[in-house]
Length: 354
Ligand SMILES: C[S@@+](CC[C@H](N)C(=O)[O-])C[C@H]1O[C@@H](n2cnc3c(N)ncnc32)[C@H](O)[C@@H]1O
Image 1 (cartoon, rainbow, N blue to C red):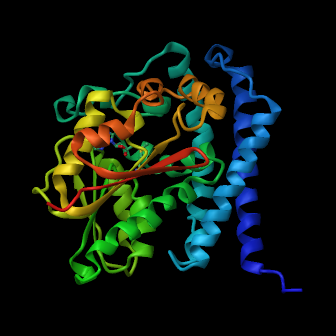
Image 2: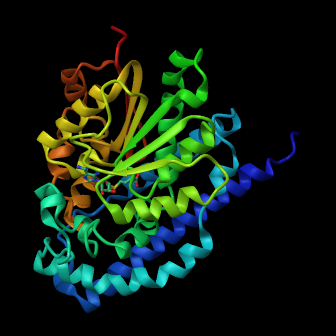
């Protein structure tokens, strides 16, 4: 009999702990909302037991892939255990303190409650709202400081495992450039937010040059704290609109984009994909990760329908019906492949050589 794999058991236990903590938080906060702010309760579809079982199965598959890919050396195992526990513990009370204003925005359908000092001309109109009903939208340090923990809770501790699913296709795609010096390769993470995808990429590809772009200066500040106080090479963080990337044609060998498209109107979605095409060098790879959709995961339809009722996600309903493959093809991408992992769909697309 082979000895128990302690690290694997520790990983599974950690994930189960995170999952239980996420569920307990959602249960407790929903109960409190029903008591203190009943008018904020959204009209959601009940989730049948079979679907909950299916969800559990889907999380287990995700964990299995995550473990196996670490085991095969795609990224270091330590990444599976990395989380700023002390910071999150300190921030957890702030999440509770923030809830009443979130409920109030939901109750009053106040979606334009963003900081007054923002120069609205610097942002596209679709961006100037409280995504998820969160305080200040994406436009303050307060919002940026709570975001990672909020996402961790939302996905029951699987957010980084889902983000890591971009690493295998990314590394496969970069094989085309294996004859080049790794340090000369550039990977851009579009809508990098607080930099969590960049962190996963940095651990997996320590030598490449990393760049991240986002519209939120506050989120980039958070990313800078998270990424750049380590011994690795600095990632360049740039404030800008993904619809109009400030990079020259064909300057990147790979581009990733995680959890952005569902927050954009259809036209902007296409603009972002077109910009990624323009910016990629021929032979480069584009790895896109976003919510699953109705066509690939019909069994999770009630969850997708509930998601945009509970959280303010103005473009989600349109996104889950959108044909992303068609959009990628219309930009010119070829060799498109897609796979789903729990709540995330990953598309890989290549820009062919000329
Ligand atoms: C749901 S968050 C995802 C962030 C990050 N990729 C992650 O995995 O956590 C969406 C991010 O997209 C950014 N964003 C939204 N519209 C954008 C645009 N047009 N250009 C650049 N960033 C944008 C927001 O500021 C936010 O950081």
